[in-house]
Image (tube, rainbow, N blue to C red):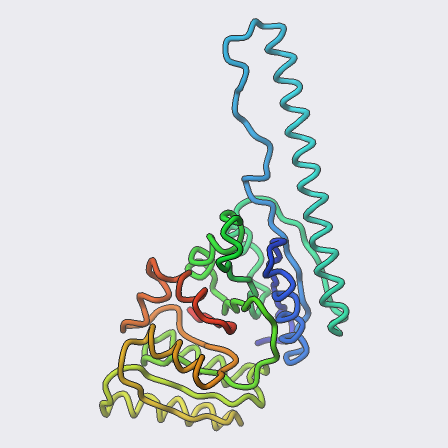
Length: 286
């Protein structure tokens, strides 16, 4: 990550926003990257264009349309005020966590389009994940999680509901291009310095698998990162979650594209469910 990179933290006002702030501050502390807090006013909060006047006579119709336009303007104004308030609250949290280089930005439009326009200067994108208690927020980040992962060209850090400093990292490694890119990112990023990393392949133990893991371990150790490797039989979606729960890993890192069963977890219809089922942050690499 270049020194000019920044952390883009997407704040939506949901129950995960505070966790996103704490995680962004923790990442900033470890990497010295500034934090930019962004709230996107989606199209659902834009002025409505529905014509409710029906067959009302011309004079009454004109008055009704004027009243509707005024109401739309008031709603848009309230949404902007709420967005700015959300950003100010988020800024206060990140500031209390010790980050001094903080900016805020209120955007309008589609969240994926917004990310495409602003991610060029980002080293990492931090978002929250929707849980069972946040199903009301269908238009918030949770429903857009897969779209964001597919569209983003930067690593996506999916914050867990509760913040806890990370000490151990589980890397899901299938030998695919994005998995290798994830290992290379870990080796280069200050975020992972001093953390204990375990690289795991779920599947058959073959010479190719062992060689891939050995290469990953060598790359990480050359970067000064404590790394171990493991081959586990079973289904990735089951075994990875079990390892996190049983061994207390604090973070999961995995490629967003692969050539094994892991692929279906992160670009298929089960993407959101996979991230939701994991109680720790998940970093997804394209």
